[in-house]
Amino acid sequence: MADSYSSCSIPHTFHPSMVNNPNPNETNPEFVKSSDDIEKCTACHKILWDPFQLPCGHHVCPVGLDRVLEEGRCLVMDCKLPCSSNQIFADACKRREIGSLEVRCGYQACKKIIKWKELEKHMESCEYREVTCDKCCELVKMYNMEKHLDEDCVQRILHCPEGCGYSTSAINMSEHLSDECPNVILSCPNECGMTQASREQLRNHVTECPLRRVACRFKDVGCPFEGLNDDIHKHSEDAVPYHLELIALREEAVENVTRSHIDDMKLTIEQILRQGQEVKKIKDENEKLKKDCQINRKSIQDLKKVLVTQGEKVIVNERHLQEKASTDGAEKIKSELSAVKDMIDGTKQRLETVERATGSVGQNRGEGNAVERAEKQVRLMDVRVCEIDLRLQLFETINYNGVLMWKIRDYRRRKMEAVNGRTLSLYSQPFYTSQYGYKLCGRVYLNGDGTGKGAYLSFFVVVMKGDFDALLPWPFMLPVTFMLLDQNGTGLHERESFTPNPTSNSFHKPTTEMNVACGVPRFVSHTKLESDTYLKEDIVFLRIVVDCTNANYQY
Image (cartoon, rainbow, N blue to C red):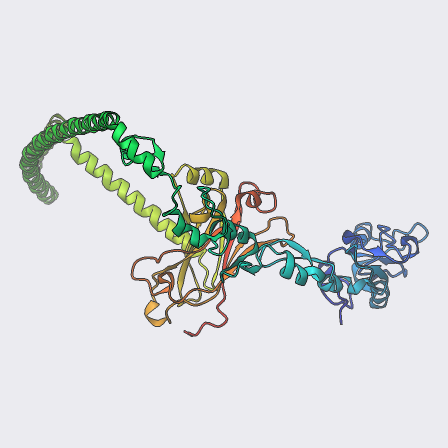
């Protein structure tokens, strides 16, 4: 069996293509023995790994082996024995010896000493490694995860300490107690002396409190006065002139606004009437031009018929010319042929004159509309070609395994367009759970949507109308995982998973091109997303994975 720190077993005979294992020296393991006591590669003088034996008996690592093959001999000063690739062998015995060296675990708090070949396996399961909490996404030591979930996690579920029966996450519990809980004991804000009442009792009390302050009934027209009931009655009697003045000012303002709206409407109506007259005039001119064009087309067709007839005559005369042997007959036919050619040239000139006249009329009378229509048709064809090219590109990148890999370029420009309201969301190319399965796509709001707007990236999945929906079970119930991929190679991907709600219309059989998107409005904050871990060269990678393991259809 191969040692655990190597990705393949040792070959019996060396070949350069076999040197593909990662260099364990790059991980800098801490050896129990002094590095001076550990055997080194005779070529590069680093700790020996994946050892190969030369014909002279010296050992080299894969890196040193490249140098040996370049030189064509051993690099030990006292040896220099020539060697070739077919004389070099992998030393399995030396490899087991090197792999049995004792090293310390790479995590500082862990005191375990293990064999070098078992180091990677140990570190994958070491209780001192840091793992990401599935609820709050914080890094926690593995041995401390249980305590973290029970006592420290801000997303752990707590029951209201006041006994109202409400449950929420720890981070939201203080907000519940301060704003919502009906059992919290409060005092009357009017300082009427009531100090031991629950929030629910206080709501009923405030409407009946003898010290509650009431706004003046003319507050809608601008009166700012507030006071107790007795003060309000006295104010209403004393401030009648003031209230009348406020009402008059409000009526005047409303009248001014109404008058302004009426003036704007009048201007709009006049513009519409003028445009209607211009449109009618243009229609009349177009009708006249159509009639002229029809007449010109008929003339052109007649001239073309004459031209064809004359051409046939020319062909017949040429044949007659070939059949006549006498000089007089030839001269006569040549003369007739010359007359026919002159007639054809004249006909061509007439045809060109008519065509130029048709073009001149069109230019003078708005015939440019025909050119514009032609240009419009060309533009429509260009758009159609672009659409076909885009569909071909989508077809080349389509996935039938329930996985979407989405590369978003120009992130900062696209986010600024979302902030400015120009492009609120982006759609991905479609992907499928199988060749005849569900059709899906991704949708992302770079500046957030709903509760995540302005501070988060919102990530959603959309169920689209597919060609085989009639054969699939509904509603769509396959688990979905959203991911923001780490571009540093450390594997710290941001992820969020959920199982579709069968009662949601988002997962029922589509009746339009696509259903309402469903996903995570607060998928990842802009602060975390725009770090060097996830944003490089103005590019981010998003991924959607649909778990098709338990799909209850087979085609």
